[in-house]
Image (cartoon, rainbow, N blue to C red):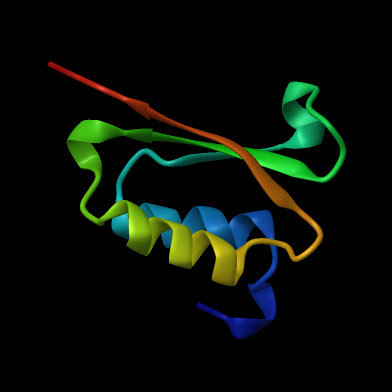
Length: 77
């Protein structure tokens, strides 16, 4: 990944998809949330990393001005 992309939604989406398929990143403007927040949705059947690893990736790549509002894990049986 090009290091100039760090701090963007695209970089976060790319990194999460490397760890777990079907990750979805939405910025506050896309779902009507509070300014400068974002949310993430993951599918449980595809999560290949621990929650600690996911949070480390999110916090190191996310746009600095954005905060994680929520994360959802969708369970498939």
